[in-house]
Image (cartoon, rainbow, N blue to C red; front, top):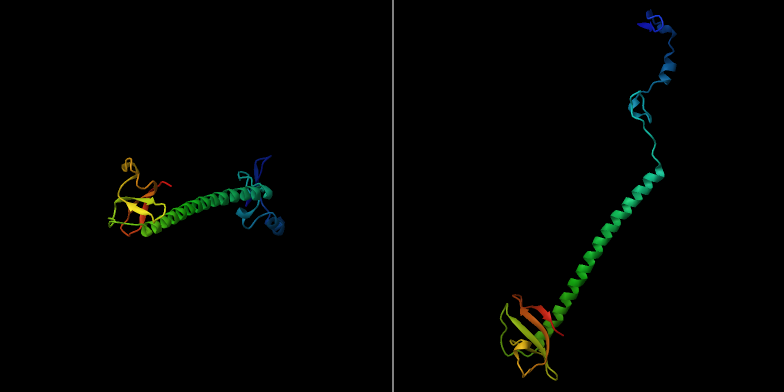
Amino acid sequence: MQEIDKKNQETRPIDISQIDLEKLKEKTAENPGLLPYAHTVGGVTIKPEDEGKIKTNALEAMYQQTDMQMEQLYKQMQLLAAQAKEINTRKLISERVYQAEMRFEPLIGRIYYLYERNEKADTLSLIAPHEWGRSKKYANCIATIRLLADHTWEIVEVTS
């Protein structure tokens, strides 16, 4: 091997016996890619991150994500509560329908009117409140309902 003398631009041979291999070993890395700093002149500078900043950002992201999920669950709970209330109202009206006086056999898919009577049971009628004219035989219409195929009642409108 030869070394170039930059001042004189001459080459001279390198004496390997004068090289301290142990000292060179200390100055070189076995895996330079794992060093926490750039190991070449053109290498990227690696700066250690602020651990507190990383944790704060991660904590903020976690709060944002869990708050979003909690809001979604809350909306689902509200929907379920509204559906439960609707089913309960439907059940109560259906109970009143089946306890009511019926002078005909209701047909599936047809609209009927449930009226409240003072001293007697409720009455199921084919006649809408606005169709009674002046007589108003049944003053208080409870609900407008439709008989479904499973013989439950869909509430079209609750009037009282």
